Amino acid sequence: MFLVGLTGGISTGKSTVSKLFTALSVPIIDADIIARRVVQPGRRANKRIRKNFGDEVFQADGNLNRELLGKIIFNDANKRRQLNSITHPEIFREMCWEILYYFGKGYKFVIMDSPLLFESGTWVNYLKCTIVVSCEENLQLQRLMQRNQLSETDAVARIKAQMPLSEKISKADYVIENSGTLEDTKRQVTEIYNKLDNSKAYLTVRISAFILFALFTGGVSVMISWFFSP
Image (tube, rainbow, N blue to C red; front, side, top):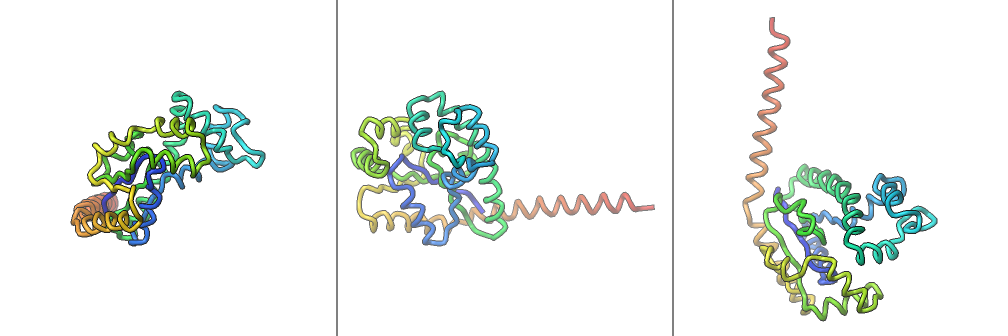
């Protein structure tokens, strides 16, 4: 099994692309979903956020006040880095468990869906390839303002808080242009899927895993034989 990174700018349509891959039976490990899970009440990240950001960024039921926390971190780079230092290790750990799960299921590849794929750099060296979802700048701004009910100033601040889309595109192996129709986006996703599905890269990982397993179990057998030998 090999790993494919999926990212894009905020409101460029990454979620749409992710759903299209899901429809093709590709497992998706979604960093956003995991990020919401690791900050739930009682979790370690939840407690650390309260300690570092105060009670005001929490609702009465112990869940994060995401709107307020978002305003803080998207306007303060230091606070954003502080929050990332709390959540990223927890997210990484849970993503690793999901990778092992899908590896055990025998999938050829999985998609690592992460809005900060290049910014964090955590997974880049482990990826077979990367996909960036792009769209026109004006369309991105309009989508974000409508989706999150933001003013233009707040929307621009959130876009600028991420790596420039042009820089992400320069790092990508595949780019999906999502300014057109859903059918056009679906066509691009299907083309990339066919290339990934026909790749034999997953065999290298399976063979390597088998060799490591054989060496480990063989080594254990030798040690047991030596220990119990006369």
